[in-house]
Image (cartoon, rainbow, N blue to C red; front, side):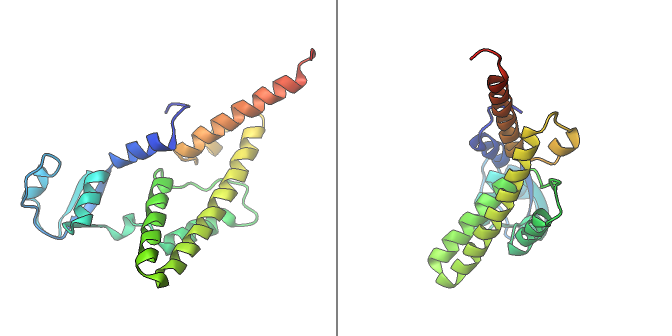
Length: 184
């Protein structure tokens, strides 16, 4: 991974990751991205790039598997793990956590625009997300300021967090060196 990877770079990679979906209708049209699906049956799980899955689900040709969806219950579970008061560790998140989180929040926000009663779900999810991010940022900043970089701490970071950690560590080390220089 490049040290200059941006969230847009990570998101682009995510768009092309394979994801499993369940077909809900026959795919009878022809397109290079879905040609292999014409042989699949309704109810069958298939693997396609995320961007293809998004289009198929929007057009009601497929649905995501339950275990691959982010919802308030899953977000609450992540929140609980992250905010346990005694936790100084960085719990492992799935590599695509932030990509999925952004899409989940956007979905809830759009649903809230259509149905004001759903706005409460968006507000709750946004609050949980802010807490998770704040907790993880505090821990990452602490790791970046500490001497050395234990592999067990870094292995639980997502790509976005690893880039942030590296940038913070480099900035902190540069600052320390400037402070400790013997000549002004």
